[in-house]
Image (spheres, rainbow, N blue to C red):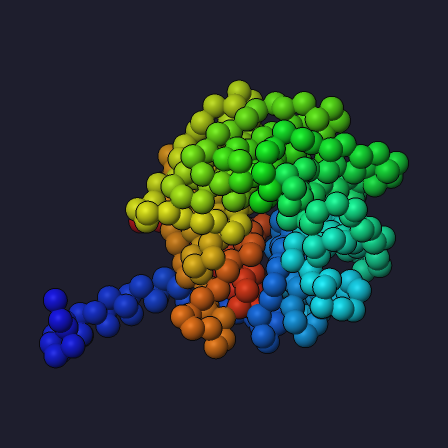
Length: 329
């Protein structure tokens, strides 16, 4: 139907658009990177945000005071762009990675703990355990590497057949969840490289997340399957229910009680899900990146505030946004 000359339909369309926009107005927004960011991560308690940007290298922001706490850098050349960041569950350390290097940082002092360069392939994703004792990274050649940073002991997990797209590590560093383009995700023991559970998909596994108490896992592929698993037995709990033909997830995090999941996508969408049913409880659209055509932004990370009243997001728009977590209708 052509609506260009029908004022009634235009009024209806604009009214509906206005209603949708109301859901996507944050309680507040703070600019962290004027020209946007390449990667970002948040602490579990929403107290710190770490992001990689064009003009400022890697910046650590105190979200309570909205001030820069530390500024870090890898080598000063264009080949060392930080594209992956993770923060330990206990907020003690952070890890940053470009394609061939990674660095550990003390979040109390801001001091660098060390730089390391990998010898094969490229880093696709990275994770760090409590106190920075273990680092896990997935490579473009399908190998996942787990390192004891105290002793230097390395374990290479060779279960995947194609490139690694996402990794997560338990807070104690003993369990890894890894997803690959080979249509599979594995939960495995990092002390022995033995597989505990295999999660099968029908397309490339692009996102994974562990509940920080080891109760549940989230795995999502590049098409229609976004699944939540019971790690006590490896059984499927639910498949997230969405109507779009496909849904790509750029971030995922369980609530502290593991009863809800918050996800981000490359299409600005931030969504809250019920873990047991897979139903979407609420969603928002983060602000688009300045100057982007079409208007777009990738949600890099999101977390719950300790009081359970808000969700905080960090996106490629360079903004930290806070969203009211009202009870769903």
